[in-house]
Length: 294
Ligand code: NDP
Image 1: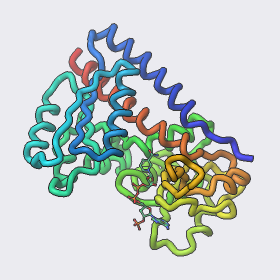
Image 2: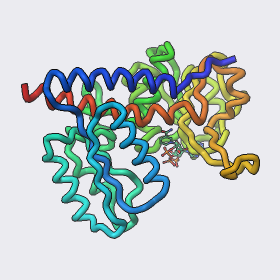
Image 3: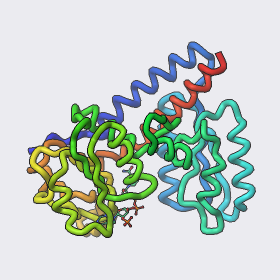
């Protein structure tokens, strides 16, 4: 049976480490890291993610700047807000919660965030540096960073291993593959046009699944002893639940946990780690800023 990687426990450990560093910064510089979380409109899911991020800031001593804008806000007004946050010296990270309403171009808004405050790591220059040899981005995107952190804190070595990433989105699959490559894995990317994905996945020592396809990856697709990080978070109908649904990953956990060496559950795997990585990025941004000024 696979070792189940407890994302909640790992996240808790890292949060304690962050809180400790925030205290140390506060003593040394008399200042704490600040994160601005910008939300536009009233989407219930976005509101709940934003609440979670703001609460986590409060728990760790990070100052949160709450910018709540109405659904009808214009693109130029939103950009004005971003510019104000860019020059606010108490703000070290800016997060614009996605998706934005249809009348606003996400790419335009995200590229206005100062590179030094791009804690989501989505700025094209940060992603570009991630893709280049011997260049270091200022921030790593949170979910892929969470995947690598879970592997390394579980004692899974990446160097020289065969890794397969399922999915090639800008926010998860592509940057996860680039991070694995930087860590010296030999990386293959599987996507929706890949033929016979199972034969490719079966070769992998490390699988990162981020396709958004409920339980697509079966136990028989996994190489015995492989490390499986399941990013997928899919709601499937479940009449036995009060809500009428439950969350499952892209991997058939029941089957795969009998074959893999390590596996993350859904929920309780990558999910709790993603917000923690956002806080970690904010801490890193603040440290760079404080150290530069002294
Ligand atoms: P996207 O829909 O943007 O991308 C999905 C990717 O998977 C695409 O590259 C797509 O290929 C590929 N894909 C789709 N179907 C298949 C298939 N049958 N076989 C192989 N590849 C396939 O999703 P995201 O990257 O944003 O998210 C992926 C999953 O991760 C979702 O379930 C999401 O909810 C979850 N997620 C979880 C987070 C967390 O913190 N736990 C954070 C972010 C996402 P193509 O490019 O060809 O279309």
